[in-house]
Amino acid sequence: MALKVGDAAPSFKLFDTNKKEVSLEDYKGKNLVVLFFPLAFTSVCTTELCTMRDSLTDFNALNAEVVGISVDSLFTLEKFKQQENINFPLLSDFNKETSGAYGALYQDFVLGMKGVSKRSAFVIDPAGKIKYAEVLESAGDLPNFEAIKASLN
Image (cartoon, rainbow, N blue to C red; front, side, top):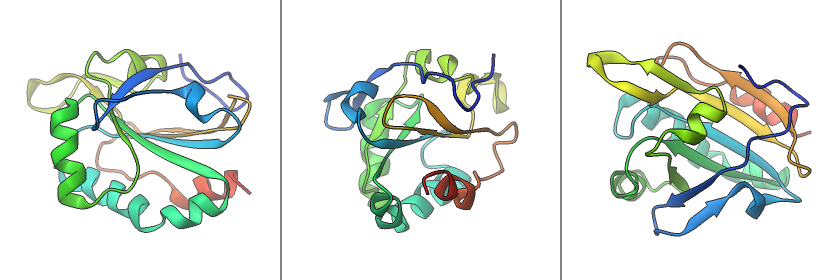
């Protein structure tokens, strides 16, 4: 079932690239932009995360933090974060529970892969409610960064 504006954001606890557990509750009182992405080191995912990297100060100015989530291992995400100088946490949803809870999981992906995060963007308000939800069926599409920003104003 797809999440929609006004729904309570599903809670999560995932590990970041520093092997530190990060939870939704860590961001209580702030806006949180959650970007689910299919796979590190792929061209569209790199474009998406580097676009956010380059505009992070705009989002921070709107009292928003950002996290990226994929089913990659935290070790893969660590290398990707270093290579691309990503300046926000990347979280490993290796067990696919969070992607599934957000309705952002392909059952079947390319090349026979199963259980890969769908490219999706959610904005969660300081009270833990969904302010913006965009789940893309095509992994080749980018989220609407302007709409994400507008939801924070």
